[in-house]
Image (tube, rainbow, N blue to C red):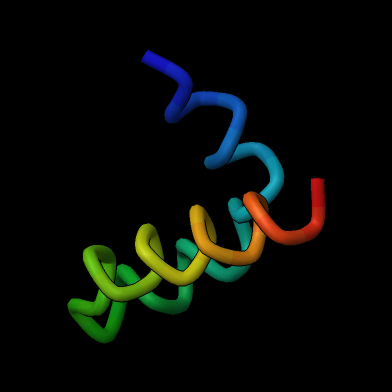
Length: 38
């Protein structure tokens, strides 16, 4: 499970997104950005 690594990098964004119930949207955005950033 490579979620732990993403959570560490997106701990702040994920925390805020999760509070709004956009964990799914945040995960997708994070993966998309990570793929382009890396």
